Amino acid sequence: MDLKSELLKSIWYAFTSLDVEQSGKVSKSQLKVLSHNLYTVLNIPHDPVVLEEHFKDDNDGPVSNQGYMPYLNKYILAKATEGTFCKETFDDLCWTMTSKKNCKPSVQQGLCSPKDCFKLFCLFNLLSEDRYPLVIIQPEIEYLLTKISNAMSLEWDGTSLEELLSQNAALQDGMSVWEFLEHLSAGQLLHVESKETFSLAVDDVFMEMYHSIIKKGYLLKKGHVRRNWQERWFVLKPSSLMYYVNEDLKEKKGEVLLEEGSVVENLSDKEGRRCLFCVNTPIRTYEMSASDMKQRVDWVQAIQTALRLRAEGKSSLHQELKLSRRKQREILQRSQNNQSSHSEPIAVEVPQHSAPEQQGETKSSEPHIESTTQREVEAKLIEEEKQEREKQQKIQRDLERQLEEAKEAKEKMTATLTEMAKEVQQQKKMIHELQLTQVKLEEALNAQIHARLEEDGIRQELERQLEEEQKKLVEVLLYQSQLETSAVRSQEDSSTTTSPISQPTEESTEEIPVQDSTSTATPPNIQRSEESSQHNTEMLKNWKIQHNHLMKPITPGDKVEHVPVKSTCLGQGQALTSSEFIAKVKTGITQEKGNGYSPSPTEEEEEQDS
Image 1: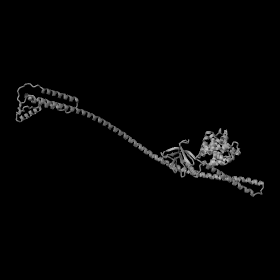
Image 2: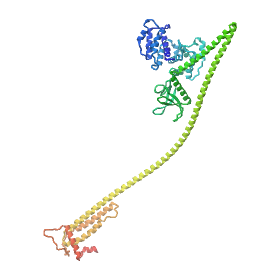
Image 3: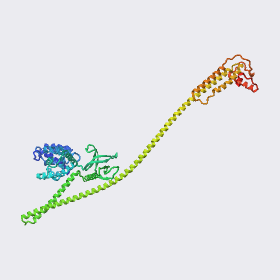
Image 4: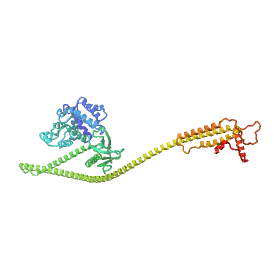
């Protein structure tokens, strides 16, 4: 059924709702309102002048359905394009116009809610026959009620429908949408304990049949950029495979366009994922994982069905199924008509028989025709069951093969995991040993660092002591140099004295170096500051004694022999310094000793020699 036929069914309900008197005619003003609303919901530019020109000869009188159809076909249905409008909004407009007049309050107070009534209205138009007034026949009612029962996980019992049809013979040729809603809401077609369960089931069937959803459910999808696995809610239609964050369909994550050249195929297990399959499109490849083998087979078959519908240019699976069921009914009806036509020549060939004999032959031929028809139907059903059984056996073999492959893969995975566990244990052992080694090395390093710190402390202490000793040694040397300087000065002072006292001076000068040598001799080991200070004190005392001795005032004394000196005298106006005088004296003494002169020792010298 094309788009035009689908739209015309809903428009027919809207047109009849405007025919209050049921005369088959509607006023022109009401048709203007209806046309304007249709233009709006179908996204078609509205031209109000066209309607006036189309009915310019009949401005006052009503317009019949036949008079409105040419305008409807030319200016509305011919311009409607699939995909440019929301069909559910269009059907909701027509339902709102017709339900106010035809939907009884008892229907809405029963099993069906107003939303359920609208969804059942759409499903009724989908399954109804292509003749007006629109009716739905018994096989299609059974199909719809079976789908709703399966959605509630129940098995539908057709006895209630059989009883209703047997009680009302007028319903055997078909049931209108209002009769269908009334009997269903009253519980005469379906026994339901919970209205909520029934509403959920009607919603599932509505989404599947009306919105052409072939299959829906959760799958794991591999990302294209991040390459991680995420659980998504997938919705399969003949033209696309959409996926959302969850089943409330609020956040859409992407869409797989099933274009020409797209294929679906199974994949081997990898990356710890099982039941893998992929959809290859001209743009990219989408990898998915089902929960089990059965789900993978169902999804692969559903996607293959969608690709087939896409290739054949069909937009709905249930439209195809409806046409298939209608063809089967037509074939069965044609076979019955052919069998009934074959029975007529038999009656013509024997006109000479009496009336009772003809009646008997007619009665005997009817069971024969019925039995023949029944055998053909049974044979066809048997053939269909056989084909279905072969198909199921093939699917079962595929599942068994896939199960064996899964077992082998599981065994390989188990062996791999065992080896990996062993390697993990070895790695853990090595890591433990390395940790122990690290601890030992850290302890040794800490001990070495501690010893190094102690060594640095001792070295610093020794350096400090050495610096102190060096300072003390410098002080001693300075003090010694001061003593030598003072001794030299005392000698210079003593050189200015007269010759009688030169001998004591020489004796004293001879004694001074001895004392200086003893005083300047540094101790072998200076260990304590107290010993060094005592030593310095003693040296100071000796120096004071010698200094006092040297500084003794000169007094007249006995005559002593003087050392002869050279007759060299300085000229007039010349004088010698103390150092020059001492050097001259020493030079003269040396010469005298060289000549054999030996002065007599003094008393002090004799005492020192003794």
